[in-house]
Length: 220
Image 1 (cartoon, helix red, strand yellow):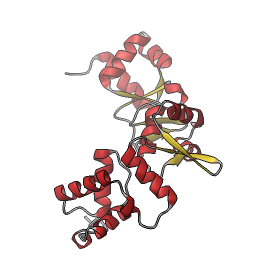
Image 2: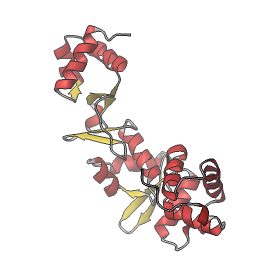
Image 3: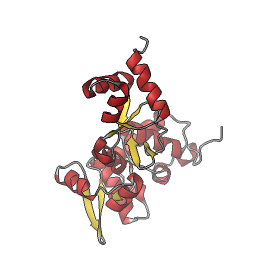
Image 4: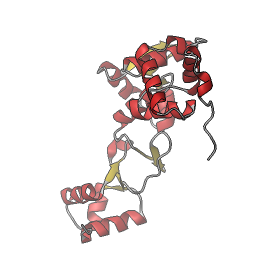
């Protein structure tokens, strides 16, 4: 379906300026705020996770980094959407959990109070480490891996939860040609579980199948 004239005008405004607040955008378009919100929905948009979600950009504009983040000056956008969802996603993907300072550094904003709320609501777990809290995933297998990484034990694969080991081996059966690094990425993408190549390599060593895997992804 071809875009309507207001939508075409909307796209042209974002071509001139990639981020807009709703009121100035409505003023430029000459439509009410509810109408502009409808145009944005029809076109596809992201709202910022910074500045209380007041800034908008079109879905075609951001070039997200590996963490699913994109910044325009001080305005931040996330594939996960809101700041709350972004904090949960980043924490779940972290191999050893993350402190408020680490998360704030990635997101370029203070997020301590929101992390405390997420912990109290049972969305994230946390552990005291020195003067800081390390925030962890609520998913038991993922959290077990993160806790284990925090302790710095020498044989992480030996203490992987049984269900995690089964998932790794199952993915290997489906994709026997993947390297350890590639396998870790597949599991992270499909299962939302933070693993690294070393943990998978040690697991395969324990099962006597290390020689069937590559430790480095092949060059294209």
